[in-house]
Length: 156
Length: 363
Image 1 (cartoon, chains in turn cyan, purple):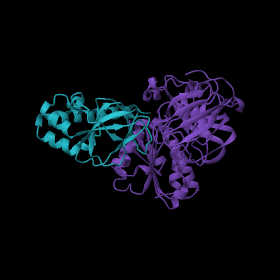
Image 2 (tube, chains in turn yellow, red):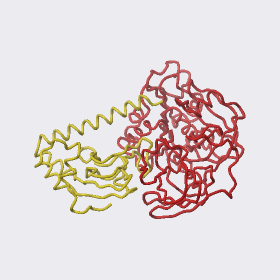
Image 3 (cartoon, one colour):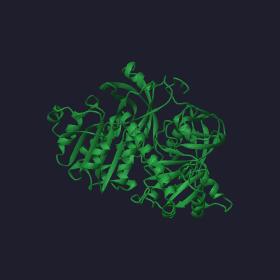
Image 4 (cartoon, one colour):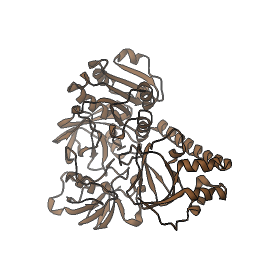
């Protein structure tokens, strides 16, 4: 894992991120200011179960695999996270101080590492942006529960 | 999937191919026979290529081909979604070598095996197929050579005229045995389970490869046990209970088992579970959970050592054991989604360390 070169266009990446769609340009600029580009090589672990959940990550390039169960063992139901998605959103939730999954790069990836506390402070200052982001976060969590419920009910 | 040749013998050594596999931190070489998946050849040789299902679903054994000629046994394998075709990546559990080959696997994987028993190929014949429910049977295989395994492990099976291997847990007493029993659920459009349910007969040949899997229980660990199993996943739990009972493990260490099924009609092996629990009252608790039904009232009277409740087994476990997870080693088996949500519960609510959560996913 390494910090990426400074020529990375943080703002351009954030503009293309679904969860931030509609957020005002000044707020995006503030987020870009706290975002740190990070490269993760194929096969490398971004974080593991039990790690402190300090940052959320925007995927600028590459694909990662979200794995329940940790210890580096992929799961049959592992989710692929493509470019344009956000992961590690436990960093935005007050009661989730630790990671509950492991994330491994399926290929060389470029991410933006955004400190969760800093992002929440920025969203505090722009209630519309905060509402948009939290609304989409709630939708993602709800969708995850609905998919889980459907799979459980169909499991035999 | 391509049809496999109906041979019962493995090809001669002279036709094997030299395979090199390297990660960032180690390199290993081994021989692979033309008819065996490269993953299986590696595991036989004690090379610890990462794997989970060993049957083309999970994508764990992904590798990049550097050189050599290979053939895929299952180009449509679900695990291929984790691959990039433009980078010549392959699932080693579905790839056979037609020449000397070299592969690179991602990450800093130590390829030195630490398993107690190296898996091997063997043949068996169908000894008995016992119907457990409308869509579940127990298959008894009479083995030509002994299969040595630990409680909780699984093997992959293949009928000679049906392509591909399928993973199933051994349910019988672990050790070194010339018999192996498996609980097998009929899969929609599943060629192997269709054959087993409708056409297989006593004496029919089945090839096996095993033991596989990391969700192992050995009594020497001296741990309190939690087991959450759904459907045919209880095979893993029963194997653990077999060795736990015979070794008198439950004289000293408690165990809680949550066996989930959809309806009353999907319950099986209650007599067996009842005998386990009756032998260790207050120490071994077994609860049967029905997710889509209310447990029939007569069950409690018939099996007084078991308890019955409506709900999903992981949810009932979370409630029953609230505040009492610490120190346990948890085993989880069954449909992948049940394994996922159980693991999540054990991490978030049970606060169990990951090293104490054991599972294998090979559905």
